[in-house]
Image 1 (tube, helix red, strand yellow):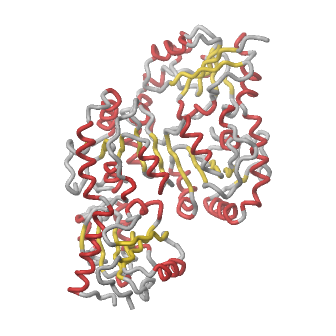
Image 2 (image 1 turned 90 degrees about the vertical axis):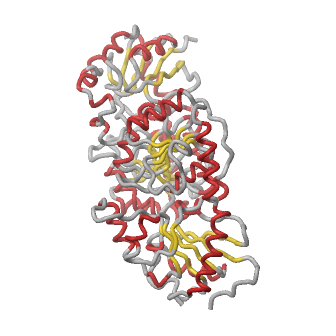
Image 3 (image 1 turned 45 degrees about the vertical axis):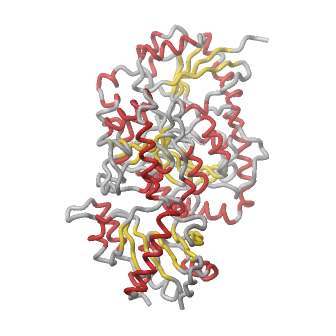
Length: 309
Length: 280
């Protein structure tokens, strides 16, 4: 039996995922009638330990990042509403990059019966994901509230940061900029308070795709929330952001290098872009997104039910 | 008491900054000039001249133009260091390395008074107290760019253990803070060529338990005694699991590693190696 939804009372919401990547996308403190708790779970993780932890918390709702890594049947007996949140890019047509095809193969391992509803971070992957799971909604990954900060004055010299694993595509784009500037490249392993502190010690956030295919990485919204000047490859979808107004768009290594040179020479030149980007980031704020999302989820289940239970 | 030797070190702070003392050490007054491949020769010469050195040490034999070496009016020695660059930079059209003319103008060993081929020393201020906090209170640290080879060795451990990988740009206070927040260091090579690694001394000096592919040469270090050796991704996963499960088992190795790091202490190495060269 699912725990009865308290009439007007708070809902316990479990967020499940690999802390390194997804704690930054979760609700971390009570807000909007939700009481959150984060549960670490990664591919190959201990499913029984997760279930034991969830049973102790007795959530009304479990939001599960990367539903494809959850073992088949794990949530069959879990008395909670389960919402899968797809976070990985997928093919958008027949001629897809090999990396995207690999991710689709991973997704095919998903046990759809684990989830009442599934959200995709990108509406443009819904068709590919739909082969495996019915996509209920699409919205960008939210940003935990603690990342949000006012736009601070640029340091002299401005401090530039790229957080993301190294790939040939990224290194190719970063190479001239790394040669010219002290770009801090954190390839793996920063999360939680340390990630927040790291971000708040920088002024410029760089976003590059894994490989040469379009996407919208949540690091964009995270950097915007921190009040950074965001310099990114082409974003698709834009999720309401406007290039040149909320962030700077670059197409290649030379443009990235020139953009960073301009920032170094004229640190205040893009102050308005930072302010606009920071304002737009409010649409990603976890305490704003999740109460609405979960209210919609429960209303949808009330109206249309679920094949899961 | 003799006057300290004024030595100017030339290199890139993100790669070799940890080898340069920020304060005078025994018999040595060190200064540092940041030089990158796209910096003009005139800039390099002007910055070196500001420090009026008696000796210049260039990190990386081919990291500066040969003409610059000839224009510096004091003895110049090279300290052999492999550049910390991701694979493929030499083909990148936006980088100077892609230009045959640029490469032809770079210094070779013949342009220097001598080439010092030994591991990078470690600035004294980066040495941790021997009583640094115990194993089991931090995470594993990797500093250096990614390559296909080193990523294959690291990937499983990254997903099973707490591993921090900083690919570029770590220096000064951020470097010290990152070292202080770690208890294990992983040293893996970019390619199959045997080597020692530019940060082995740094990791040991910072009091981290060093987990490394076989070092070549080993110098005075002894696998199993002052560091731990791995040869595969599976070795690394298993070793990190053992360290996390029973840190006490490795305390003695960590302490011996910290003791072995004394051989890399800048205030010990530089006077011994450089004093006679200034008179060349």
